[in-house]
Picture 1 (cartoon, rainbow, N blue to C red):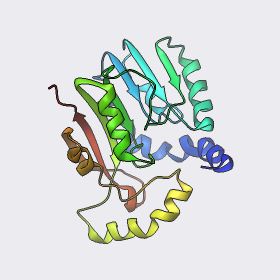
Picture 2: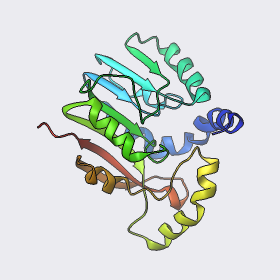
Picture 3: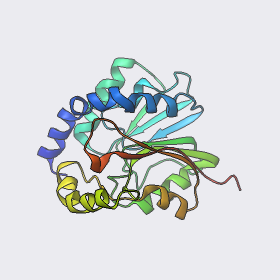
Length: 211
């Protein structure tokens, strides 16, 4: 994404999302992140919205954000909290500079829709997770239950991707997680206060086999 669009998105993101955070996202973040423990990696951390919901006693928290404008705001938000166990990385989701089987949990909230190569990203997540570790997800997905909405998702996706940081409206993320071998425990819910093309959301966990 070009520098201007990147800076613009970083500057308006939190304000643009304030209403939907209040209606549903904040509650889902708390539900998903409060039980986490040990070593945690978050991909696509953005401005750091999830910081409010992580337990304070984690062994390690690594926040990856490749976009410079978003990362600047992330650093500011981390500094306000003064948490020494938080590391900030500029790595992309497709290649993260940590050893294999290092993390107990990896977190992706509204991120897998925008990664450049989702298969490579999920391969990297599997590499980084300990056996039995889990990917925690909250992702909007293709609307398979309503063909008319799915059709609009396809029509709008090129423009949406340009405006919203490569965000894909039609990714069948739950099916992809299962295809690459994760054991999924996912709920299908709907975001409140957003256009219909981004309402369907999966939330829950995708676990790496312990074998």
